[in-house]
Amino acid sequence: MSVRVRFAPSPTGFLHIGGARTALFNWLFARHMKGQFILRIEDTDEVRSTTESVKAIFDGLRWMGLDWDEGPASETDTEDCQGDYGPYYQIQRAELYKKYISELIAQGRAYPCYCTPEEVQKMRDKALAEKRTPKYDGTCRNLTTAQREARSAVGSSSVRFKSPVEGVTQFNDIIHGPLTFENAQIEDFVIQKTSGIPTYNFACVIDDHEMCISHVIRGDDHMSNTPRQILVYQALGWLMPQFAHLSMIMGSDGTRLSKRHGATSVQEYETAGFLPEAVRNYLALLGWATEDSQQLFKPEKLIEKFSLERCGKSPCTFDPVKLEWMNGEYIRNIQSADLTSRAMPYIQKAGFLEGKEEERHSEIETVVALEQEKFKLLTDVPDRIKIFFTDVEYDAESVEKTLKKPDVIDILKDVIYEFEPINIFNAEFTERACKEAAKKRDVKNGAIYHPVRVSVSGRTQGPSLFHMLEILGKEKVLSRINSTIEKLTQGLL
RNA sequence: GGCCCCAUAGACUAGUGGUUAGGUCACGGCCCUUUCAAGGCCGUAGCACGGGUUCAAGUCCCGUUGGGGUCACCA
Image 1 (cartoon, chains in turn red, orange):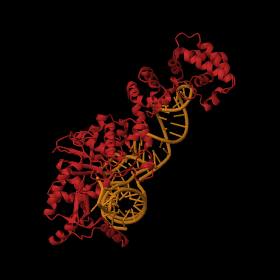
Image 2 (cartoon, rainbow, N blue to C red; image 1 turned 90 degrees about the horizontal axis):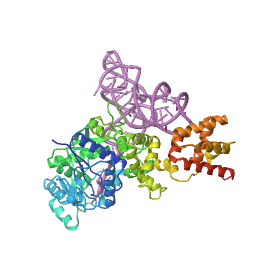
Image 3 (tube, rainbow, N blue to C red; image 1 turned 90 degrees about the vertical axis):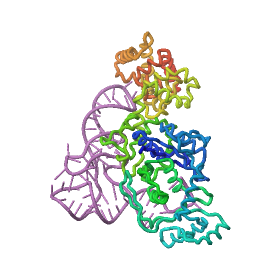
């Protein structure tokens, strides 16, 4: 039997980092097993589902590089899909669910319930007040045909699944092993709302079966839903898929990852300058590891080595610091041309090239390459390369530390004296010239280097000095140093 | 509270009865270096606790504690 897995988000918000991890594990498993990865939109929540969320989910998955073999092909046209098991929006599969609801009612495995949400809520409150487990009391479970007819004449109904009152429901989770739940704990849950729309626990089963899903890989917050779903499989006489429940991702304080832990949507990570392959690599390591605890994987290696059996059972904490480290690793390891194109949107956003980014592409690439090993985020790129393209912005602290020392003006003048005759203004000759200046003044090289750095770049931190000078060119370097001398003389710094 | 799951350093984890408990991030030190990085070397730090089983337990069993999940006409 071929492997078919699905990612089935409900479109009620952006693509959350936890959802992205679930999608990734499904995708890795599908690719590893040479199976199918299916995207299904679970939009049975009529009030919270939005098309913006559908788009956000698509964008997030595409950015992560998680392509789906079957699923919606368009976020706007819900009819448009790829794959033979569509439609992939649940709201369009209403007839299918109705068919099975009728079947279950006919078999006596489900029944219409005329209790209103308010009445049910009252039961719940009462149970809680008496410290009992809230559970539907079964008012409508044993109605006679006559009673049913009478009640349906005056009002519409929801449909409840008739859960067994005794026995246990078991399944063998790929990650957790054998799991057992007592049926007595499971109430007669609603499978069709009064609106006629099925609930999650029902629609999910119908679709997983109809779409021939072989493995259900999802967060372990769904673990307690599983016995309910299994009951539905059994009632319908269907074989159930294999289940694999992934551990939850937590924030640094041990609570469920949420807004107050910082960025939680993959879109925010894109904006912050992360590379999708780094995010993917990091997320893969949250709850999964190889025998040798390898950290960095080429994309095809991740697919090759991934296995559900090696997924961990315990919850894990999301660590943004390690993600940043990993992003830096990826940035260092791609071609500088590639880095430059990926950083381009962030450079454009910074705005200092005023729309001339494309025509100055090769210049940019040169300086990006110079600084490549220092970037952790793509958003670091504009900040580090800016000095090559804009006028010097003097950093107050750097000025204080290096330009406010005695003799600095004379030192800079000496440097100009040494630089002026240089014809080939490259790293080698500028370094030689600076050393010469140091020698003549009988000072340490650093006494020359630091003032030069600050006068041409405005700060103490930056690229390798002589390479920076070479790229800047003789004309710019001399004019920046002269301008610094002038400002110093006039007391403007 | 009921039910379910989980438990190796601050974080992610390797480990399937016999290991000096390994790797990665973070942290500290040293080296390299004009700066910031990167890199190299070294280091601090861990089997939650208590009972069993066994010649031998991080590893198996039970309990305790702690953490998480879930108890909707949300998914």
